[in-house]
Length: 343
Image: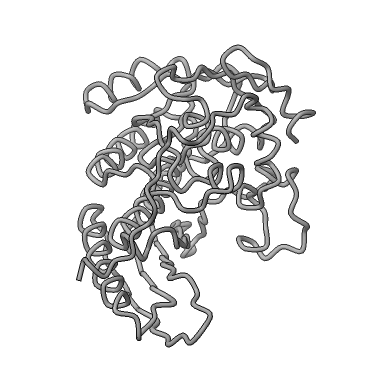
């Protein structure tokens, strides 16, 4: 069956030219609707898509809601993925479920159940059965690894004559809040808090918005992903949250590190001053979307305990910088201010 799989073109990171001006990249990506937190596809808004909408929502993306009169909280979220499902459906759905679970855990929500729907599988294509079979393997593996119940699993088979849509996986995840006082939002809380990356950074641009939107390259590998590391990060997040050691937490997602920082800074009109990893090319560091990374800001009074927990659990981390009053600085270069440069 593996001989049937459609192979993508060879991808070489070194063939991607490094931009001379990172600020040009930032302004180019600002108009990418996939990097806006308010658009037609996540709140069915009538508001036009614009760079100004990035991070401007007053409602956190956690999806929390009360389920009874006692104030018990539940969370739900929906995620979709189509990259490389034909080439590696098992890894694709594992990435999707890991991403959804990581986002919930950043908010202090415990994921408990997942449902998966596989759409646009061509019944007449021999690859269809391979995609369905391996996607199911990935679903079961991720559910077992993250202790999730599978509530539903469906496949939509179609017969296509000419136009062939891209196979797509859509998952819905449900989670519970065990202690509503420990719910953590994605927004930076105050100037002076230190910013850390939990997890490793990689020289990787696979399947990133930057690669597709800026360099116009859509045929690239899936991002770096290690499901065992994801599981370990989940355990770390649970412990940090239980001990109330982080002021905010955000999974590095679409747009990479830079846009994750922007989404964290904008709600409270704050900024960030960060130093990049010199062993990684700057565009990979800022815009790569490798899995298994969390951005947190930590109060200075809790920093020693925070570092101690990560060291004890043998979790790699990187001191990124600190929260500013509003200025955005990268490697001692100012990119302006939140209130007049990017908002």
